[in-house]
Length: 456
Image 1 (cartoon, rainbow, N blue to C red):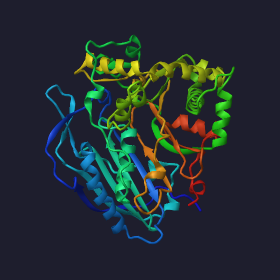
Image 2 (image 1 turned 60 degrees about the vertical axis):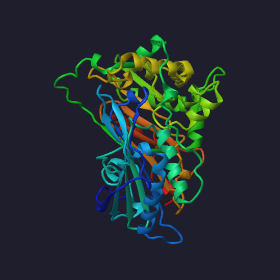
Image 3 (image 1 turned 90 degrees about the vertical axis):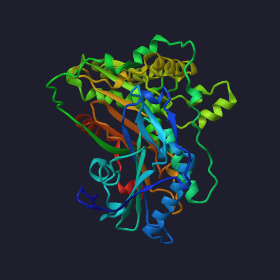
């Protein structure tokens, strides 16, 4: 059976706003210094469910989703808020219970015919609706087979993946009338800057105030464009990559090994420009680091809702990346990651933002000019809770983040597989030429995600 091309219709049947089930006092919630490092980007994600057994109507499923969402928004009140610029032009949250846009739709396609390998064709603009208002939007889509797709888009300035994962699990627990396993914390004082601040010079190498960036080049027409694909990588292949990337008794993590392999592949796609410099960034979560040495703070940071991220990166000429063995590139990845995995790094990053406010800032790895080599960011989605987002009709058959963010910097998120323990599902948003080379030269590692793999 062939996976369907993009030729199916999605018809919206209803749009409404779901607010918290009880009103609450309107109040302002500032974004933290780490939130302020994020540009106004929306992130998408989706979950696909088979037809429930025993059978359950789409209307019944939607009713469960809405009722549980209205209850979840009581504790996750920031999700029902709106982002408003303050007097300095910085974004803040007006917690006014504006609510969440909730869309109901029907797709004339069966779950097993969806082309998951190409989400640009099957998911984008169909199941993950463009968010128009507020912090979060939801779309529930009935499939021809009786299955359902539940998708969200959220404002990255307000939450990182860890936060949204926490919300999704709570929403699902409420839907199943289970006790909520973790309540969110909005205690902004946990991420206050120090007085006086202490900034390590390394932060200046990682982040840059946007006003100090050179203006974008004129008449720069990119010869390639970013597209999205979803692959799976087997546990055996990951172990093999880890073995090849580890040398001299230094065992590299699976993420370091995977990232180094991918960096080499991306460099190979630009082999004609051997002297250009390629950049690889890896997202680091600072929650456990900031809680070090303080049990109460560690607990609170574990439930902090917001962004607690840093993106250290490494640079290397394309020629060197191609020629170096995988173990050497993996060591470089390990070495640039290590300084950003400390408590002091995150405290210094908070202080650095404070010193530059109200100027907006961004990570340097995103800054890709026409004379630069390829750049990409890898963000581990290993905490993506596919198996826990059960609203009462079973676990998802498949789920993935979907983040086609534009620009010239690639984005890759490996997540746990929902069907085979130890495998990874990998969402990749890279230049078309890079993906073509990966599919040609690394097909033994990156295998197109199909309904056969998902056992639909």
